[in-house]
Amino acid sequence: MTVRPLILLPDRLLREVSKPVERVDDDVRKFADDMLETMYDAPGIGLAAIQVGEPRRMLVLDVSEKEEERDPRVFINPEVVASSDERNVHEEGCLSIPDYYAEVERPSDVTVKYIDLDGKEQTVEAGGILATCLQHEIDHLNGVLFIDYLSRLKRDMVVRKFKKLARENPPARMVG
Ligand code: GNR
Ligand code: NI
Image (cartoon, rainbow, N blue to C red; front, side):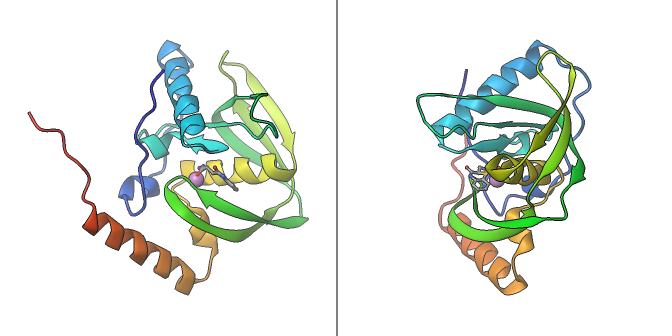
């Protein structure tokens, strides 16, 4: 297992629409392991593949309350097939937008269809933080970020701040 570097705003990769996983093989399972290790290392409660630079429709999450009782979950080709009219507001953050948090309103409950690591189709009915996190991650697979739900003023302020940070700290490059 390997912790992979995180892609940060304003990297354009975060705006890519990820591609469906064609078959669940050892490469996919190994990549899911790397994603989980990267998520726990960060630490975060969810991670989409594009956040480590791979435009595949895969996400991992662990919304367990206690750190000792890990509950790693992997969702391949996930799709929201139903969402509640009821909405709730939750404070969100994103590993690709470090140290910025804002309230986002989303459907409180969603039904998500996905493929598991055995290649089997599954359905989960999610509420609470699981529903919020699944929607946040599935948005990443479509190139959507939580700041897209904020006012244009707030979003532009965040994007400008991260552009400035990127100018001041250009990414280290491999040499040789
Ligand atoms: O670690 C994370 N916490 C979080 C909190 C509220 C709503 C969504 C999230 S997901 C985030 C990790 C991340 O950026 N996943 O894409
Ligand atoms: Ni995120």
